Length: 321
Image (cartoon, rainbow, N blue to C red; front, side):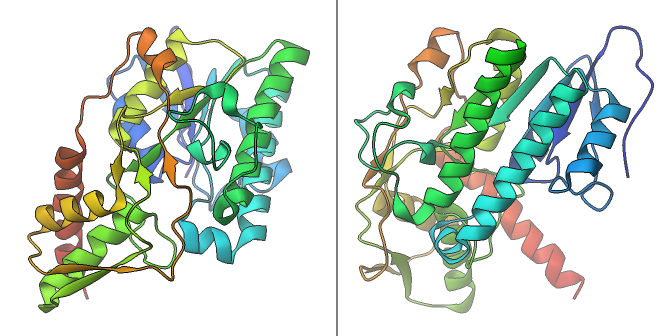
């Protein structure tokens, strides 16, 4: 149900769109300590793909700030298998919310994009000005095109109407409430599930997609949530701003780390018939660092935290079935 309350004093009313997802739930945790009223709405009450429903709800809720964390997300297989869904759903969600914000005179909006907006062969580390300088990675271009449109829409409303709409580009994210479904998940939660299952069933090997050589940057989602709140109060530029961990690892190194965390002692097998995706994707987050923000949670520490949560969730689910 809606969580709307009367405005008390000068507290900001902040709507977290997509509050049940991995990113949205992390932002909700981070906002607990803020002097603000947090607004949410369940997708059963307002489908963000329905324009009229979104407009009416935003007009009624009257948020001061919108954090747009709602999106259809998935890994290489999901993006490649459902291109129309990834393009359409993300386009309509962001256009509906951003337009509704403007019509309701919401001055401040934070749009969350993705590092996949940058060209496949962008110079590393990737600066914000690499946007639209080359072809995208084909396996996730549909999602990327939608996110690029969201950035441009924020810029357009800023330019035409003076709205304070900003865009933040995170690197690969992981954390609590991630998607661990092997058919739709990203690489890190997929590896956690694979290694956990292999250890539980006594398997001696785990198959990893691709060659293991691509380099990826991973940020714990609670660090992103902290950056979102930080930038909400300290950044008001038209250009997107990168938010990354500052270092990357190969998929092989990532798999070895997950294996160590989960206690799996078998061997890794790389299925080279599966796509690698972009060879390397490291963000240049120097603009964010110059504002005074740094991530706090290291990769292995974060993976251990997620694995504890995942393992406990599996135990809880088993107990109820």
